[in-house]
Length: 67
Image (tube, rainbow, N blue to C red):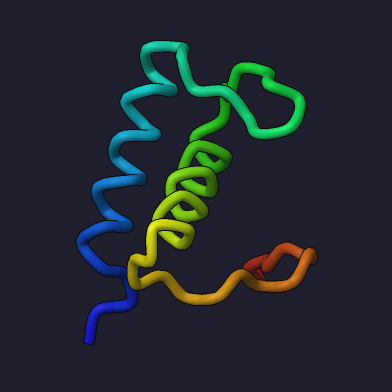
């Protein structure tokens, strides 16, 4: 069973293209998005709003790999 739907994939790839062109902006501040991770987060957020199959957001803490 897939974790993400087709709509999520489309939105993330669109956000990545916009980031590469330098036209992707963050929500509140309107600053240009430079990081890849933030572009992915924006794409997933848009897919979530559009009703795509995307898992719920995690907590505010980040997950770290144990080495």
